[in-house]
Structure formats: C-alpha cells, structure tokens
Length: 249
Length: 78
Image (cartoon, rainbow over all chains, first blue to last red; front, side):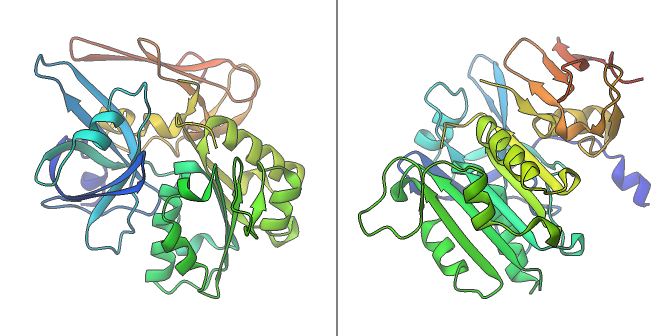
C-alpha cells in the first residue's frame, strides 16, 4: 500500500481562493481551499500553473506559508516586475478565483521534529515563507527544539509577517533576530547591514552545538549565508538551502 | 533569472518519476562530489532545464519538453 502511494504521479489540481492579504505592497498571501488536500510537510512548495486564453501555459514554484497543522493552505508570493506569474497572482487574483497547482513537492527543504537541533533558520526577503511554515509547525506540535531565526529585509516596512515574528519571539524557545539592509528607523535596536560571518555568529548557534540550519532566499543571499556558516565551522551536511529568483535583500 | 537549485525541479521531476527526487543522491562524474539533487545548480530560464555540479560545473542533468514529451538526459551521473 505504502509503495503504491509513493509511486503516484503528480496531477494538477484546482483550489479556490478564500482570501488574499498584502504582507507588504509587493508581497501577498493567498489562502486556498483545496478539496481532498492530502497534507504537506513544513518547508514544501507548490507549482502554480497559469493558462492564457490562447492556451499558453507557464508555471512557477511557491513555498507553502502555513503549517501542516493549520486549517488552510496559504502561499505567500512576491511580485517580480519581470515575472510571468507573480504579477497576476499579486495584482489580479481575487477571493473566489480558482488556481491550478500541483504538489506539495520537495522532500529536501523540509523540517520534522525528529531531525533534532538546535535549529537555525536564515531568511532573505521572502525566503521567510517556508521558514514560517516550520516555525508555526514547531509551535503547533509543542516541539522542545530551540530555534534561532535570522531575517534579512531591506526595511522594516518590507519585512513580511512582521507582527507574527514579534509574537513568535515572545516564545521562550524561539529567538528572532532581524537585520535591515537599506533603511532602519532611528530607534531601531536590531541589526543593520547585510549578513556576514560576524552577524551569523551573533545571531546563530556556536558550531560545536551542531545546529541544523535552513537557509532560504535569493541565490546570492543563500550563497553568502551558507559560505559564512561553513567558515564558522558549521557542518555543511547539516545546512539545507533553497534558492529562488526573487529580488535582493 | 539567475541560477536556482534542485528544489526548483521538484515538481516536474516528481511528475515524471512519480516520487520526490530532491533527496535522491548522485555522484558527479566530473569531480566525484556526492550530494543530493536539491543541491545542484539549476538553470531554468532557457528553453530547457540544466542541472550542474555545485563544485565543478559539470552538467549532470538536462530536461527538455516539447509537444507534451519530456526528454531527460543524465550525462554527469554515472
């Protein structure tokens, strides 16, 4: 039975948009109702497919923003000006519309409680999306794994899930650090500037604690973070990465 | 669009091979690096998808699609 289930081909399905919420002026969370949703793992993504009236089809991957334990399935999508899919999703899609997708997919960039810790989650811009799924799941299952989170954003206004992060930071097992790379309020007490080994060492765990690290962000951000952590002595085999083609951070 | 990684191929590879391939191990024919498919450097902005070794740039995977047919070449995976 299990083998049969594993070898099932992926099919395109349709979900109905229940609501859309702007996280920042360019980033939108889309919540879907999906009949017979078979569940997902924290960190997985969906492929979304759009079909033009002339039959042209194109697809892009978007991380699932909600935890497996959440009632609904949400995606958070950053609008790329030269994108083929994201401008439609951010500007046009409305509650009641249908959206075609396949998934959940991806078995590498996922977190489960029995992977151990401590956990270090490093996000550049909308790279926070799959990590938010992990954080929500961590909370929902009452995990005792300690977590440190480092988010890089251009400004406080462009930091997605701002209020939820502040709320998560009040949980004693979760420590949230934020670095702002372009502009910060004069009263800002967090970090400033792009990530580098110094910042990673302050916000992360000591290498001898054998942290399990997840890094998600634009390609250049992920390369910098991963190389920095390896230079600090982190075990490369315990660093999982996911890159996307978003804007810089 | 710059290079991505093997996570971006998860959907199409799962569709074609009916299982998650991002955790599948490989050994590069060019430099001997072993890793999982999620770690490949993946270019998706051309007419097909190309996966290269993160260490030595050897082409490990090429995926093209036309008229509903897919062609997968694995030149760098012994």
